Image 1: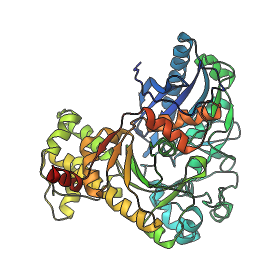
Image 2 (image 1 turned 90 degrees about the horizontal axis):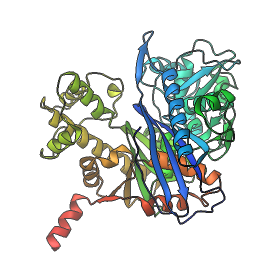
Image 3 (image 1 turned 135 degrees about the horizontal axis):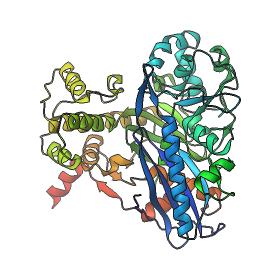
Image 4 (image 1 turned 180 degrees about the horizontal axis):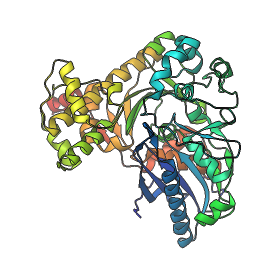
Length: 501
């Protein structure tokens, strides 16, 4: 068991729930997961305690890439049992559980509630083979004008089109599948529904015309549920396995992890851009309404639902997956230099080195990442040395350049200017990436919190319980008040200050 805390002050607490109440956050990414306890009280604000960490990753099965979902759920139950034990030791009760994971992927469940196959991973290639067939039935421009979803070959709509038989089955997105196994209730949380390519971005409902056009059952997805609504009570078997109290409920949060992360961006102004930096980088701005123009489609921006009906207008940019895969390859070759040492060595290299398109689909699948990066650099006419530090610097420079391009496009397409960039998630700890991002964008970067996703998860539960009041501004004030944030000034600003001094 690994413990750690992040403490915030609490200017917006209502005290409607006992101070002994705590909230469990199940937070699972594409490479790891954890169960955390969140405590919210008038005196101590918000703190997070990591109760159980576990690995996650794709496995090859029957010629395809899948998630080992059975093992994943076993770890979830272990984490909840450990959380229940910790709460009991402290004289606390877990009021509710919130679940957030990555988007797009799903499990197929029959009428008896059985998972009929191992969920595919978005890193599998099967969606690529159905894109042309889907677009022959639904014009891509029409698809975007309704859903506002950026084109990615692994979007749920393309994966479902690859299914051989959906009769009598329902698709439960991964966090909804976990919630179903905990409660027996079938729901689809709205922020994740908006990533399927089958959700009307304006109406906030399923785009049934597309389901019909593709021959998909109208009830392929369960009914929608909004963040803050209660999914249901825990099943007796889950209570027995975990030791949780019978009145513990599962509450819908921003179940797409980026929706929870953006809810916890500690922005004090409206004119901010954000980067949720992890396996992927989600780069964008927050809007009250979707942007469904043809120019937006051609720029491949997405309009995904956020908490409180907001729109996460963003583009997927390559992320730290490239770095972690390189580390894995190097470790297999006997090279075990720490990440800190790698980043220090990369920072010592001069600027202006080779860059690649970090979100090229060629980098989606695992294995041989250093070789693929060097090959991509050669295709640009550059020679990337066969040294880890050079490859790491190429990744960092490429990500920062991609962030800058995406932000410039977001400002152009929305007609909004931004004055600051907030980086949350694991990438906020990467000092080299943060500084390069400030330099590339010409905007100050505010880094933190690392645990934005879990904070957003817990705060939505706390608000649903009446512990926290207000909207996103109040939640963000709560985060900003107690999080240690780091600020990085762009190179031009540093030069001006140096000259003035």
